[in-house]
Image 1: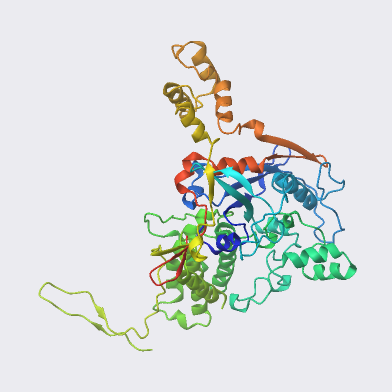
Image 2: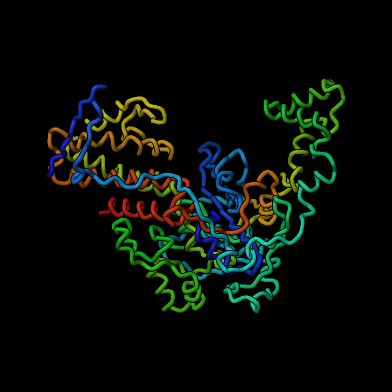
Length: 378
Length: 188
């Protein structure tokens, strides 16, 4: 994480000598049991970006801490209709009549209260006169003098950097409407149909949205409505240097394995059925030769109800070799319209999905990923 | 479509691998993904031609668990001795039940030599309170609108992770930029 641009850029907003503590959160609502009443649990985990990623990725090293269990309700969220202006409760007890969205944000306020309220914002930092670098803009704050593992005290500035969660939860965090993008202002009807080359939709601007919500006029509510946002304040605006609309960082499990690969396989099986190739595809799928690191599937793709991320990864490894002989080969099928397109689409995504799992990327490999992505959407 | 010409060259040892001479129609293989060798590193301070301005240290830590351990001359803290530690580790490694641990001590099988704990509950307490008192007591229960939820103090959590001695060699306190030999930025 320390080699990425985000840390470099954010460091410029800290006072001189400050140490950035990037906070990474992860949460997911998990269903426990149907017996003895539906039981769900909504754990929130946290780690810090200062720890090297080789440690962070190992579960046995305990780099992740369980920091909260959020309330799980069966209450409906008022997702479909525009919401009334409600205030986030700053202290207990909260206002009555909270729907599931307000409840989530109220719980987040309490979770973050030690970082937001007691000393934030405390005193002005008098480092701005001597330095020409940009001073901390949203609020000035002292930082915490915390002791680090190497035995030294540093002036630490905790900043929420990323939140690992699925799309519905990010819509909850950013308070966007269902099916809308938490990051940019793409209209709902256009999602999923745009090539990455044509991306022209502006990213959501936190300051703009905050101003519009605070104005609270009929006009501003209408603008927010067009952007698929609820006209309610958001707790994440209060966190220093945190942009609620950028918390959704690339997430290989949810976006690549469970997301696009599932969609692509849906297209592919439909398409193969149309060309009467599905039976041959399934035969080849099941007859995959045994080899270390390759999983042998005993069921066909459609025969499996639920896929785990690991299985999807194995699936992408064998997909291209299974598919190629059906589409190109001695029978000259490649000349059928659409065959080469389908193959190119699958190949591009396979290359993308396997490439993006590399632990280190360079400008070159990122450009490569971009090319593959454009190939996939062509 | 140009045909790819393949020359087979026979030598005294046998057939060599076919040499493909015409690459005109061969598919362009893109760069294989690999680990990128970092040859150059820029630290944040270098960038501004300044002294180290990111991750500056402000004196020695006093209260870290590692510092406490060194001060007390007992490397087995919170355990009394190496023997206590090994017994506790054995209990946990082999998933010994609390009741079995209680029976173990009740029958005096340890020869009354264990000084840190004498029952399963005491062992559990010891483990939970060993780091910053970060056990069951670190949880706070809240209630909003008849809904219950639980949180921990984020500051304590961050301090615990930041000061966790086993991570010491793998911590980063300042941003850097890394480049490979073609002067492309490398992200790790």
